[in-house]
Image 1: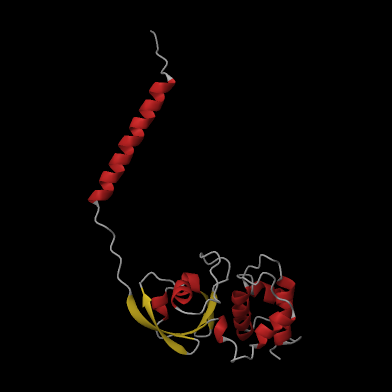
Image 2: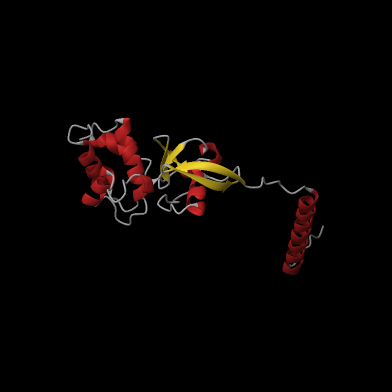
Length: 197
């Protein structure tokens, strides 16, 4: 029995026909589905750094996006946007959280502190001053999140050793590798015995 070998032109023609059919079927299926409904933004009062701010929030808006897009507070950085780098760390009711994984609407009635809220006017927070004194940053992109985590770390009491500090700061990634300087800055704030000086 004789078998026929398809030509290159026949193979390409068949592939093109199948692709066109698949695309048409996909479009038809999409046109039959009702459009996904998105809730319109609603106004919400959010307390940030001691001030009440009125923001337009959709239910899916993250705290990070709300801070960066609707306030003049751009110190909180968007790094990975997946909760892996720590650049977006802020405090909610005194506890450190990743703002890229936190829905803004869940923050109504809570106290949010960003890097801009640490200083007292022109007087830097002791941790900010220590980071400057120990050159705890190079490019500086991760620094706000590092400082916010470091302040929380001291309050949490995880400062008994350099190893403990490194472990509890491990959620904050510094791509420049300023880790020894960051630990030195934290050590200055807490003192040699691991208790805040």
